[in-house]
Image (cartoon, rainbow, N blue to C red):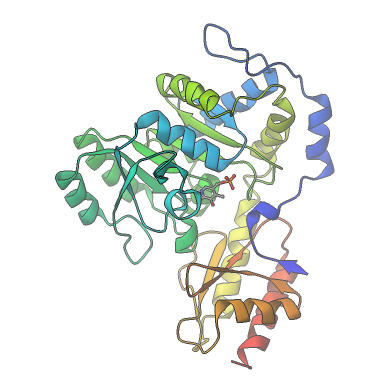
Length: 345
Ligand SMILES: *Cc1c(COP(=O)(O)O)cnc(C)c1O
C-alpha cells in the first residue's frame, strides 16, 4: 500500500528512537522562578525551537490542537471575537475554542483569495468593523492544498493587525514546509507573528509533540493555560528527544516531499474530468471531483483497490500528502494508479 492519507503517518527511525534512551529527564511540571521546568531535554527542545523561529521562548505540548488551544485561550476570554477563515484547521477540525461550552469564542470569518491566502482587503474591512481580540492565520494552509502565504503578504497582514492592536497567532503545523517552499529560514516567517505553533509529528517525522513559540511574557502565561488544560507533563524529555532529532535532521528532507508533490501534480495536470491542483506550494495536492460523476469516497475506494490510500476532505476533494516514507517510485506508481482510475470515470 502507498499511504498518502497524511504526513502524520511518518514513523520514527532507529536513530531517532535511540535519542530517547540517552535523554536526560526530569520533572517538567516543576518550574523554577524563571518558569523553566526540570527536564533538561524539554528545555533543550524549547530553546532550539525559540532559536529556529527567532521568538523568545518555546513551550512543548503533546499535540498541535492543544498548542493552538493553549495559545488562543491565553489571548482570549469567553465571548471574544477571533478572526479565522472558514476552512482553517482551528475552526474546521479542532473546534474547541469556538465550542459554546468550552472555549466560547466567536469566530469572525475572513475570506481566502484564490491562492488560499488571507484576502487582505477583507481582513482590512473586518478589522475596521469588528472588535476582534486575535487574528489566526495558517501557514502552510492545509485545506487550501498546502498553500503558502509569502513574506510580503505576511508583513502586510502583520502591519495591518498591529495598526489595530490585534495579536497574530500562526497555526504553523507545517511551518517548516512553508519555510522550505519559500526557501527562507522559519525565523523570517515568524518575524511577522506574535506566536506560532508547529508540529514535530508531521513531515518532521517525530512520533508526537508540538511547540508553541512567542515572547517570554506570552509563553509564561501560556504555561499557566497549559496547566489549566491538563497539558503539563513530567518526564517529557522522552517526547522532546525525538523532536530535537527531527529539527536537526529532517527539515532539509522536506524538500523531497515538495518535489514529489509537484511531480505528481505536473504529471496529472491535463486530466479534464477531475481537476488536479495546479499550483503546488508544498507537500499536499488536492484533486477536485466536482465535475466528475464520481464522489470522493468512490474515488478513494477505487484507489484503495489498486494499492493507494487517500482521503476525502471538505466536500468535493481528495487529499494526497507526501512525506519521508514516500519515494519517487511510489509517486510514479501513484500517478499510474490515478490515470488507471481516470479511464473508468
Ligand atoms: C495537524 C494539524 C494541526 C493539529 O495537530 P494535532 O497534533 O493533530 O492536534 C493543526 N493545524 C493544522 C493545519 C494541522 O494540519
